[in-house]
Length: 165
Image (cartoon, rainbow, N blue to C red; front, side, top):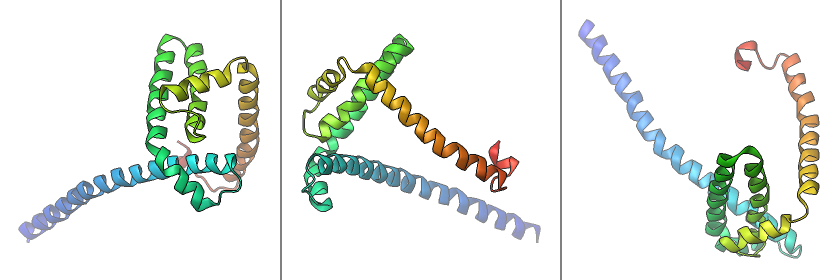
């Protein structure tokens, strides 16, 4: 009887180990599909804003060729921003802010690679404080919306103390 219980525990534990090994590649593939669809949607949205006559399907069709340059600029911009943060906080913030618009430059078709980074840097020239003020204002608006919702969820008992820790 004890041998049967031990065998059952072994089978059940090995089943869960195998499930974990099976789920990991599925999660990785799902994450990659999610990121590609996210990038593709962002590029399609910029195409639709740039040309309002485009429908949703044609915006996606026109933006399919820009997914890889968009991902590349995202990686290069992130590495450049990390390099700026290694120097100090202020240069890192400035590089992050300027290169944020490189993704929009790629999506709008105004450049690829280093050209998109240069275009984004030129777009920010002389407009640093205006862009910072707008981003801070947007952050305050988002906080003004989400803080009351969070307080309401906490006060309504939707979250227990164990969920907040």
